[in-house]
Structures are given as structure tokens and as C-alpha cells.
Length: 198
Image 1 (cartoon, helix red, strand yellow):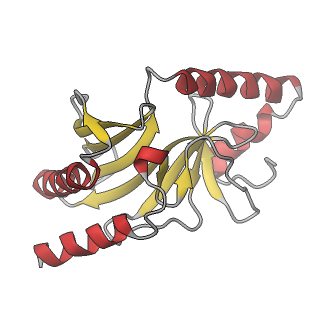
Image 2 (tube, rainbow, N blue to C red; image 1 turned 120 degrees about the vertical axis):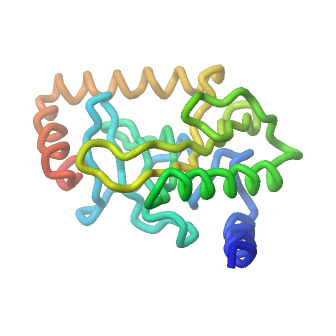
């Protein structure tokens, strides 16, 4: 059964192999591109000044419950892409994280360099000089039961684009405040809906 899951995961990661993490793409979305918000798009405002969008049509395996995109608050420019898998206990979370870390290292060894991972990360790969492909584990927060495993892609902190995106997020938040639209972000945070933000 485990071998079957690995084969399915490999096929899923290779599906549509025209682009991938070394090109800044994961789960069918590309870092730096704008996410098209519709009335049915779900998400919420992060206290860090970003929007967390729940992807409408991600290309993902069944291991992942959902895919989230961290975007700028006005133009919805994608700064981080991550799929979230949930596990009943720590051991299951460790198994999922180890499986994906091994898979990603195998698939991208020729284009990505392994780098020192954060304490909560199982893997961190530098891809294409500007992107970090990572696998991270998180224990349940208060009122949660499941452990979470994130497989994601973000801009490297060393990359100029990362600094540009952070500056863009601050600028867009300030613009929304100037335009008197910041209350919409607060409402989106409460309702976890993005309707009316476009």
C-alpha cells in the first residue's frame, strides 16, 4: 500500500512536468503571478498583512486536504504556495513528511540544492536560485487535533524578488488603508471570505 502511494505521488508530481519548483511553480500555481479572485474564492486576512487564499482548483494528490496561497492584499500576487496534509498523530506526520522529503529530493536533485532546514522543517531545497521548496511539520494548535505537514514553495530570503514581494505587501496594505478599504480586510479575516476585495 505504501509503495502504491509513493507511485501515485511521483506520478502526480510529474504530471504536467513543463514547469515545477525550479521554475517557481507548485500545485499548478506560480510564485509572483496574480491569483484571479472570484466571488466563490475562500480565504482570510493574515495579521501579517497578507491574504491567505484557499486555492480553487489546485493540482494535488489526495494526501493534501487543501492548498493555500499567501498573497499580497490588493493585487493578490502569490508569495508562497503550500499544500497541507493532516495526520492523526506525530508518527504519521513524521512518516508523511519523510516520504515527501525523500520524493522531492529524488525528483529535483539535479536542479535544487539541499540547504539547512529550519527546526520545524524536514527538508529545504534551493531551486532555480530564487525558490525554496520545503517540507514542514506543525503540532496541533489549541482546539485542533491533527498534526499538519506542509509541502510548499516560497521565495528564498536571499533573493531580491523576496524583498520586492515583502515591500509590495507593505505598500499594498498602506494603499488599502489610504483608500479606506482596510475595513474590508478586517471583515475578510472575520468571515474567512474574500468577496468584495477586488
